[in-house]
Length: 356
Image 1 (cartoon, rainbow, N blue to C red):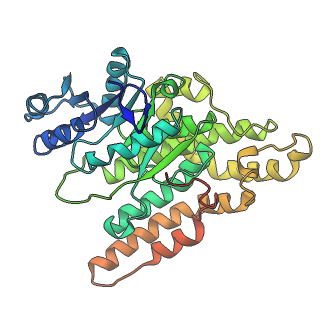
Image 2: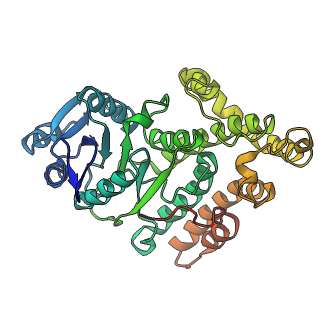
Image 3: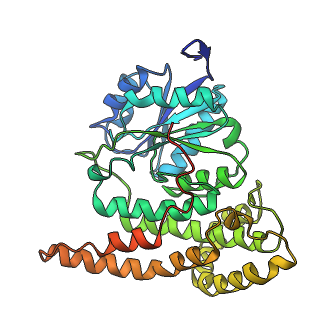
């Protein structure tokens, strides 16, 4: 329904909740959300518990997905249903009580001022409340996702967001599980749209996350690498083109075929390092022919070297983090990873995106 913020009316907005075996928390989340929005849609992603019944009892509309297919697939079902019902925008919130529904007004107020932008919740200001290993992975992720999105994206892994449908309809979503949320941010930013941030609390407690630390991080990393592969290839051969995404471009067409996509991502991971040497050559010398090639990198005014070094440090960072984990379990307090991240994954954007 239409809601009033101050003296102004804002878009018709509903909340969507992808849920899998969330019987312990779903009622609390739905009831808390309904205090701020009149309509909540829950996608039961093949749950084997009472998630659907409890969500319905709390007042939510239910979409039942027979087999668990992951968060990305559930979000696509939720987008379709909310769009069919005529909503202009949706607020996504997790089912595991990791987000506080009473912070929804922050998103509504930001949307009133910036109705065409994604509004993203950020927990990064509460570093002490986030598990250290998780915070470090979030820090590295935002470095590379921000590169692909052409802007500083403070908390790329937060699922508490407001999406305007006018923007979602401009992109083709080809990924699944937790990669889809990263895909949306990258494509929105790479078509020239803004991603704005509101500060939210970091709630890490008894809730159970279905995020698979190794598999899902690997999947997100593979997608980001393969996306940058295409993006920088386009930018290397063109002038003044920082925004490279258009619907059904070559990356989308590859992504629609799972068999081809897996092999393309493996290929991109294998050749990205030698390719970055070629990109360096093009960055230094082809700019005489293609004025302002690699436009998204040049506007950072940091040089290609810092980005290249950050990419080359990733395998070393992974090994260091593994060794550090072993040492910590043996009773040593090692903090090598923190120093590496601070040194090689800085904020190249100078925190140009302000919190709202």
